Image 1 (cartoon, rainbow, N blue to C red):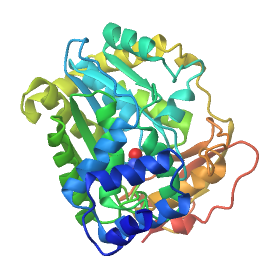
Image 2 (tube, rainbow, N blue to C red):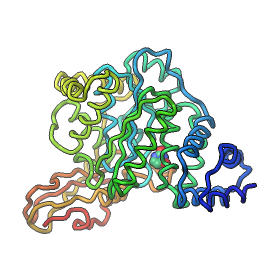
Image 3 (tube, helix red, strand yellow):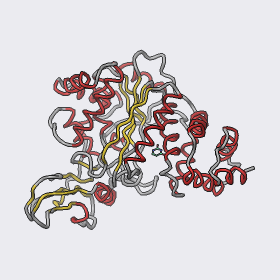
Image 4 (cartoon, protein in one colour):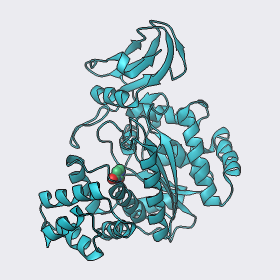
Length: 408
Ligand code: URA
């Protein structure tokens, strides 16, 4: 039976719900071995899945654990997910904006692995901040302030945990149906009514082509419809880092600056305004232009910043105690010209080497280190100008400036 199912998928045929159930639940229960599941995942990766197979797999994922229910809390519950990028602190900015504009934002986030950071690590850089709220604490906070960002509560989608860990080490992460069922099962099990997905494309993301991103978008919207959830997607660039800071405390400080309206013009601000406007239009059933006005007002009135402060206080964090390393080193331009590109992936690697990320799940990260960009794409620079500042702890990793900054 096991080999028959693998062979069926290897030949590009459609698997039934029962076959997928047998295989995936068998794996979760320890009856199917890693090598057998790896083989099926690779066959899926190569031959794809039909929509029916993807819906079936999403259902098996959701049914493998708890499904949260916030229907007793009034208001439209909205969630946002990013497929991950370098310097992506959008959740820290967007969630308070949308809550300030009348949404109920319940966001369960993850930790970073590899080059891309995780929202939970960023929040944890705020001393005292609790990021593993119980379901009871989470509901209380949502009722009181309409905003929570926490680590995953309860036993949500345990099947994704084991399958994702295997995909990570078997070259099977980049399958569109596997990504769609992994992301959407978690979003649906987290109890949101409406969901916005930010699909990143570029060298700092795991999807490299717009065509794949479009396919992923279509599939996630279909899964959302199947589950009666409104799903919108934005496909955004991840070839250059978002904003100026990469590293946990540095990114929280940058998010605060944007929430206070002190930084108004860069790719991060633009993306945050775009995503927030879509979310506000989804919760209030208004057009995006009208929503954009509410978003801008929430920044200029400081309501969004105060929402962020409220959330931090409710989760015992102390913003006055955020620390960045006092050891810094400036990276200087080796030539004069215009900055043509800042390579997101290379910045991600640098930030990881500084200690801001983890290679293995068990690695400890240093919240105080990272990179602050001083110059951006399109800027004119002279030889010797400072391009970026490194915040380091003990040693500075070898930096190859020309692989990061392309000055022409
Ligand atoms: N993020 C997820 O949660 N799952 C995937 O499969 C890829 C990215």
